[in-house]
Length: 502
Ligand SMILES: Cc1ncc(COP(=O)(O)O)c(C=O)c1O
Image (tube, rainbow, N blue to C red; front, side, top):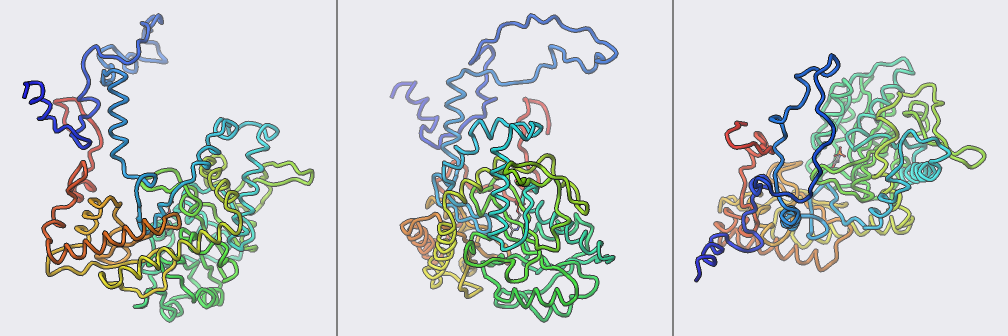
């Protein structure tokens, strides 16, 4: 072997060879583009720009110096290591990581949408206004509710907006209702939104079958109750058939039913929340109508309300005038005002509109039926190999608990081992301890579901026979098992030049 080859061997050539940071590839004088020297003379300090604010040569930012080829290769290599829905099955419960039709991206990137400025006059923006108007009408129709605001920027923001609307409603009736109820299995954003609105949280128990304890609810609803926040289908993937009774209990005491509609992909065209007594709900358009947000991408959380809450909706609202043109309207004297700058997350809303129009009413119902079928199919295939704490039937997701404590195998080991089989791990340890929450979504083929089921069954076998394989997993990924506690508590995302401490 030549010396050069020996050197290369040390580099562990292969797709998962260690990838140096772009800063570590930097070398003085390397460049991808050549920019002419500046012909703008340096400025002397003035009263408006004192010396301390002027950048000196020695303050130059430590950008890496690399050639174009190195940059392209670096990011291409990193890109190929990403785990995404375009390449792999991503059953991350509660996040609806389904495939995003590329036509959504094309629509959102059309210059007529992407290049708009929010201050452009309405005469120049009739196209986007028409789209937004129809989207809000579609979303109201799907929810079975009276009207929708598109302003909130995420599900959690929708929750906060919904609670503000409910508060405004109670206040308009001369009532101050300080408490919000939520089940013990609520998504973390529910209690957080409640705190953001300065409301106290009262936790309602969940029965052994995973559904809300109606008796506990009855015992806790009173004149202090502003609303119950309830996710349906709930975080265990169960559709709560008691919705009408729950709504009646709340309404009998003047309280409101807030439905967290983040899981609407299980009931589009099948059930309409407004018809079972819901007063307010938010959508996670970035889950239900594509643009999955795993990793913190942009979101959008439109809020739908019943007739009695319409007067309080945020302004401006997009409206269709009598002459058929579209406009922004501020005419809503009881409005809670604006909850976001400008008009909402336009790019995500364009994607949602495209998705809804692409599927049509029958397509939306079909989507939900497939989401439900996929979850129940996987649950049935895995029931012999893992413990299912709730019996189903399931809506769009389900929970299982790996029970291999004798072998010292935890849910984390199972999740990590799945990576070796090419699957993104499910959500872990929520809403109950030691569980895995699996959401296959509607966009996966039977072949993928079977492949995943086989992998899970094999992992159950490995847990019994070769547990060490699981303890050390993953074995095939560019980064092996990370210190999750420190990664969460002491994240270190910043490169620092040598010698500079964190
Ligand atoms: C049930 C439920 N409620 C609320 C949210 C919050 O949505 P967002 O992350 O857009 O704020 C989520 C997020 O996935 C969710 O699953």
